[in-house]
Image (tube, rainbow, N blue to C red; front, side):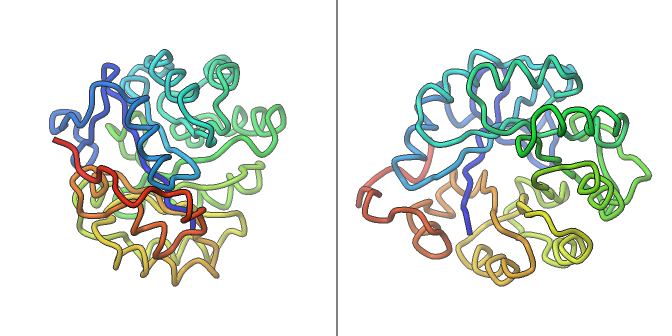
Length: 256
């Protein structure tokens, strides 16, 4: 299972939110590119970047910070947050981003999703962010009436390469992933699922690893890496397939 560190950008800085609340943010770094490089040094084979300002604005806001991350590392980068037009997605691909993550438009503009999956095959990921099984949109500020499982099936039919499932009530809380919701999602789609939200320990990662045969192929880890509750090196050793010999024996695992 691939362990993917999260880098959330707010006003150009690396932060973590609690349950998606912009008023409950904690800054973990002023230079996201430096943080990206250190995660790769510790074994990351992919990075997950979210433009939090963009999620609210409905367009890419932290483009320069994203570009600095892409230029700083040799591993692929996926980016989400405010991607609601072909132009925004193209902006990211122009600077070397590997995958674009669509959220709000999956609910509000499924035709655009179809156009983008055709224009950029295997490069469009759908982010399904849910509260109590229902999809949230617009930077998690609104909750729709659409069930996560329904949206997943529709997005697979429209050509999504992968799905990211985030349980908002667990995001940034270190309370463990929602395994039941992930099982429900895996039961209705065949494309790879990336789990996100709530991971607090290597034990949580091992519980997710049990879902790998069902289609949960990767996991995004955020706050737990920054607080030191999870060591990326240990996580990769426990559940990952990274090149362990390339991971230095000593490296940072917490942020002041």
